[in-house]
Every structure is written in structure tokens, then in C-alpha cells.
Length: 177
Image (cartoon, rainbow, N blue to C red; front, side, top):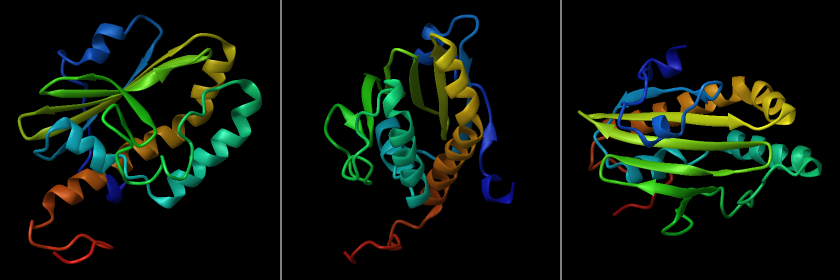
């Protein structure tokens, strides 16, 4: 797809914390994009969800609330582009941070998941790890997979566009100065 031509499918570096979690049967994916950012800064940019993603997350929260799937952080404030604190970004708690990697995510009754932003050699690698605990976790992951792929690629494409913007050019919607 032309919108995502800057995004490459690529495994996470073997040093990623996600590989230490991975076991047979778990889901893990990986993408990368040319962008020279620290992992936290990359996550802050990538997780500035556009309106259509915020809408999908709200819908997810409404539809899944009867099934006891965590919907933590699904308020409009938490889905804004602002970092919600030192230990979370957007709606995701930080679970690990080192110089090359930031990992976010949480555990649930149905599945555990983590998102990694890993900086290496002028690229930001991003991957998602999921461990499904039961039938509902497997059904949920299967249902959201097309959206997951679209959102993951969209996040990295946004990061790449941001990295290519000249530093003196004002970001859309940002006040001058």
C-alpha cells in the first residue's frame, strides 16, 4: 500500500525484551521505519492516535466491557497526543525502559500484550507480542488482527513523516514558535 511504503516488515532485534517473553504459540510481529529517535520520543509520536483510531478504541471499550477485557485508559484525555505521565504513554503503561528500547502494555485475564519501540542504526523497530490465555483471547486477537496491522503500520508511517519534516517547519495544528 502506497501510504505505508516507508514501513518495512522486519523482526525485532534479538535483544528486544519481547523475545524474552515469547513462547511457542504466542503472537509476535515486527516492523521498522527509518527514523533516528530515542524509543520514548518515537512512542510519543507514534501513539498520537488519529481520530479514527480513537473511535475504534472507544468502540472496542464499549463492545468488550461485558467480557471483562481491560479497557483501562480509554478516556478521551488518555487517548490524546499527550504523555499521561512518567510511567505511561497514551493508554499504555510503560513496563520496561532502557537506552535502546521502550516496552508498553499490560496483562489481562484473556491475553497479555506488549508493544516495543526499539532504536537501532537509524531505524525505529516496533513490534507487538501477545500471549492468549483462553478462547476469548484467541477470538479477540483474530478479530482485531486486520486493524492491528493497519494501526501498527500507520503509527510507523506517521513516525517516518515526522522524522522527515524539516526542524524549522511547523507541524500541522501547532502554534508558531
